[in-house]
Length: 296
Image (cartoon, rainbow, N blue to C red; front, top):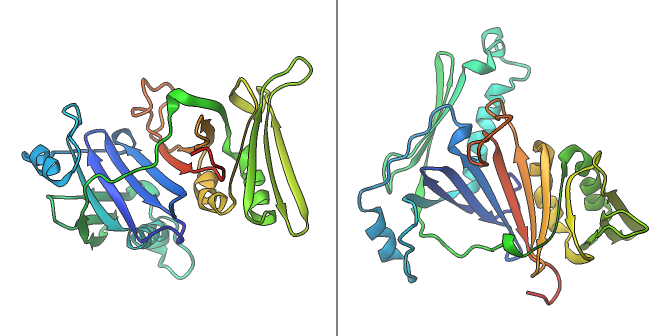
C-alpha cells in the first residue's frame, strides 16, 4: 500500500481486534491492510462510552447491534508513509551516521502508535536508544463508507502459493503488458492437471505464464470449471510492493468476477500453529479489483 498513485486519504479503523487501513487507487482497485492485535508487543483499545450513539447519528443505514466497538477516521496516506520511511531509515542506517547510531540493535527500536481520543491527532513515536522521533498527524472525521465486496461463499476459484514463486511472473506481466491482464483457472481433467494461467499482450508480443496444480508449486488449488476474467494491468503495479514483502499469496475470484489478491506478511511474532487468522501474528494486505467485463 505504499504506492504514490493511491488517493491522498486512507480510512483507519481501530477496534479490539486490531487496525484496518483502507484506501483506493480508483473505482476499480481497493486495498485493505489488516494489522491484528497479535502482531503488536502490546495493544490496548478503549472505545468511547458513546461510540454507538455517535456512529448511529452519522450513518444513513441501520447499525448492526452485533457490531463491535470501533473508532474510524481518515488520515493523509502520503504523510503517514513519509513518517514510516523516517522510521525505516533509523532501523536500516546507511553511510554518514555516527558509529553509535549505526550500531543500534534493531531490538532496541520501539514504535508506538497512540490515538488518545476522537478528534485528536494520531501520534507516532519511535524510540531509538536514548533518542525519540515523534510525529502528530491530523485526523479527519470518517464514518464507515462503501467498500468493494468479495463473496467468500461464492468463490469460483482459488490458488495459494509462495509469493517468491509469483513475484517474477507479476513483474514480467507489469513490464511487458499494455492495458489488460488475463487471469484463468483451469480445473483438473482426465488428461491434464489443473493450472493457473496469466497472460498479457504488449507492443512486442504476448507474455504467458502458467502454474500447474502441483504440491511443489501450489499449497491450495480449488477450481471445478474454467474461470477466466480480464483485469486492468495497472492494478498489478499497485500490488507489487505488497507481493514483494509477503511470504504467501492467495488469488481468488467470486461468481461476479471480483478478484481478491491477499498477501500474508510474516514477522518475528508469527505463530507456527495459530488458533485463528487474527491470532497468527501475521499482517495481511488484501487487494480487490473489479473485472473488465460486464458481469458486475
